[in-house]
Length: 234
Image (cartoon, rainbow, N blue to C red; front, side):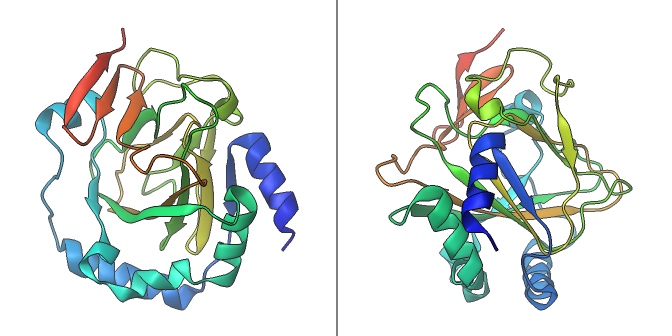
């Protein structure tokens, strides 16, 4: 694995997809733990206003906060650690591990940036793990605009409309996606079954640990700590 080449590709495009990164055994174990946690029909976690305005129907879970040691195995994966250090530097900080569960029939996630792009030097990295295939017949594909991490704030507009240059990604079981927090991205609606991804968010040294508290959508900026819209974008 050429870590420098992968890091260079990430910094050029604002995202990086690597297939067959994790073992199928670990992916199955994580899937079983996730399904056991959520059960058949979990309740939504966010407020009704957020669900309506953000067009984002995701139910989060923070397994490491509840002592689920299985999810520590990703942090200890040698290539995962090595690639993270190459991209972020040796003294980076992991924010949290967040499982994102979307029910069949939900809208996915509208276009957004995971942190404010006002300062190009302040950002987070999403390190997304897929324990099952993201397929066209299921939905939930990841859509990115390559190199948009260099273009500042996502343009105002339809939260779910297409953007020029967008690229649809269908990561397979065992895949890893590195995604810059300023990259314009969304998740398509889920129509053929439930969708799961797990995000090990991290930041470079010196970055505020609350960097992802404010998310930028095409129609607003939203503060998760207070569950309030902090800026209307029209």
